[in-house]
Image 1: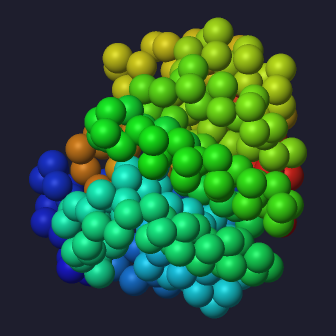
Image 2: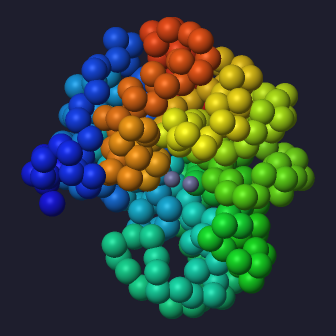
Length: 297
Ligand SMILES: [Zn+2]
Ligand SMILES: [Zn+2]
């Protein structure tokens, strides 16, 4: 379905309208173009028209990671991150038909299948246009106790891959703060580590700040019930803050529930500027510099 063919704007499923452009261009530090409607070119052009000139395209499984690398090679404004998502690793070991990519079903493959998949991620991580290894980490919300072992083994392997290739590590942490921080400590975090869709509170933000971890805020920082995220954003050091869409998920208010895409980054940037009591251009300047430094482009 073309993204511009939606029904009227008051339809709660329609794409939200274009926000006013940012004067200072920024990057969407984490997006999934392969899960959004319309072509890549349309999505990038729409984003660039409001000052979102760079995106980090994140792979969640092998097919998605290969696609991220190909897409980054084909477009100047796109960088890639490659990984097996924390919910993907247990699926590879135990099997689950509900995969991430459009390629569909897979069969249970045991530990050897996970090793094979990690070897392919390792190969992709060596490519110049691949700037990050992730999203990896721990997700105790979607994966039950039976998947914990595979998830942690995969997380540790991704940390090692990121360090060996000198790439940024992109962390997915859902309901697993303490264990994510523990594993990072045990393995030794890469020089550049990004908590994507930062979901901790202000206390955890102080820990991240001490460790030099980047905190990337998504549209949920605008949600009414997310005061803990705004408290974290308020205390996070200016040089460690990033912004992302995680599109098609987490559409910022007032468009919650409608399809998200990189062109909506200005909505989140403005909400973040209000939380930090800073002006939009100052924040955008910092966000642009931080994302380039975090991903090394
Ligand atoms: Zn995630
Ligand atoms: Zn994501």
